[in-house]
Image 1 (tube, rainbow, N blue to C red):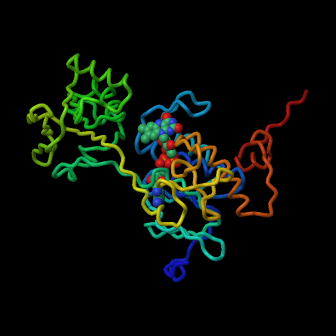
Image 2 (image 1 turned 120 degrees about the vertical axis):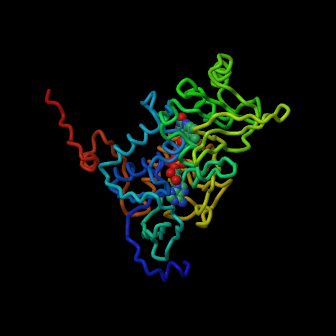
Image 3 (image 1 turned 45 degrees about the horizontal axis):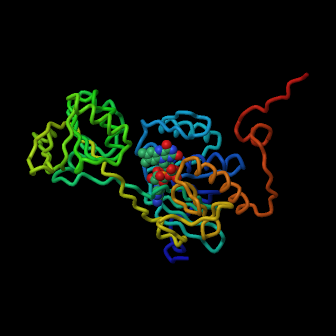
Length: 358
Ligand SMILES: Cc1cc2nc3c(=O)[nH]c(=O)nc-3n(C[C@H](O)[C@H](O)[C@H](O)COP(=O)(O)OP(=O)(O)OC[C@H]3O[C@@H](n4cnc5c(N)ncnc54)[C@H](O)[C@@H]3O)c2cc1C
């Protein structure tokens, strides 16, 4: 145990479990713990819940959530929040977890960048790709426009309607948004350093059709400068690959999709066994190499791991049983169905369904 923790002056609040990361998998962990009667505090460094779904692709439909043939990414998060509501988790948003440390009394100390200090019976790390950050547009003066007219994600597609738009990048996000916004923007220029794309072939083909129809332009090259008039972005200077021509294109808004720059951040410093920047877990209960600390979702690894939301949901269910056993080792575990268990229905706040009389 480190001295700093032993001598800290801020008393830690005792809690049953702490979930680190409020992405889809962390949110579902609230529900699975709640069904077993275990309360949770959930912490995320982002100011909103939803992880990658909300941060990276809120408007995109997801097609592989069981029983929901099509579900918007933000809609999925809204549904998960609704489902977790009966369990009254405490949310600590906009704060990064900086310390996780087992204590001699079996509790786990958790501290955040905002000074929150919790003493948890168990911790679930659902930190996804860690504190991920978009690769930024490397142009002089760009900081002044980031979040206003230079963006690394689309929060609301309608912000770009009727605007002169430049989209940078050659992956799925760049191509999907090019196709989606082309006929909504006043003008659209796609800039990519090569003629080949790392995107779905059908989307690339659609983009080429739009270029052929004169609805947008594609420039094979890269951005070299922003054009600014009285603190307002008016255009972007591009350098083409063929003969290095300089092109000036109108731009009130720029969307740069250069991919994510995953930063595992503090998770790597908590003394847990890692493999290729992911936390090694047992598939029986999703416990890490440290008893009482569990890891679910994109942050963990095990033979056959697939980084899918569906896999994370399964992991959350088994981790909940693992946590129940860790917190209450004497308790006999048995499986109950939400359809028939009066105690689970009570926890869910739903009225038990009476059997119909014959
Ligand atoms: C464009 C795109 C499309 C996708 N489509 C699909 C799909 O169709 N189907 C599918 O199953 N999957 C899809 N995925 C993958 C899916 O989004 C991820 O598998 C899922 O988000 C993982 O959920 P998670 O809760 O484990 O992590 P995340 O969603 O990454 O959430 C982790 C959270 O932890 C927080 N965090 C990290 N470190 C800390 C810290 N130290 N302190 C506090 N908070 C921290 C982060 O801020 C983040 O909010 C897609 C991904 C992308 C990028």
